[in-house]
Length: 256
Image (spheres, one colour):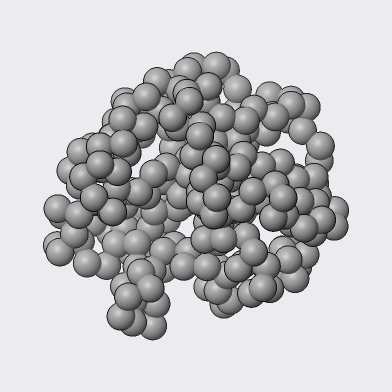
């Protein structure tokens, strides 16, 4: 099973950059997308249901903002849209597709980089989402949560770690939250399971400022995080950088 996660930074923009031509070549079983930045009325038939896929979306109430989606070759048994928490769900940040005992989630955690108010909201979402993560882990289901977590976990997960210690996305509290997710709750960072020491090749996001992309001054903030049994099925993972569809790069994982 091949699963791709990609923050699109606007599905319309990514479409114009050749997203669907590339997707067709990938032959992925499931594609998890974040930051759709569109409402249902903005979506073309190709965006809603690309050839060979069923499409499902959770749109934000605010136009041109946030939103997540899932493409699947196989029609899911059921779809869960949102967490049932109004202020989070209004921003279109969670969608889950269920196939038998497997759940695949597309997630977009908030960024706090725009200021204190959004950072406070991010911490609030993290606190409440942890309860859901514990519930999922204890459900007995195989689960993989794909998406933009907006946190670089370790120093090897971003180029300029020394200069970002006080910046959103690399704050001690954010990093400790991910550590607790892995070490205490028991979720597995699939990329790090297969590549525990990789640095420059692991980045999935680059600022549009300066020459971050050209110089590979990046961050690893996109993850596939899975329950133990499903994580153990991962056989390969890579970050695709040959083409650019947004300021993020696709994270690709093959599972047995």
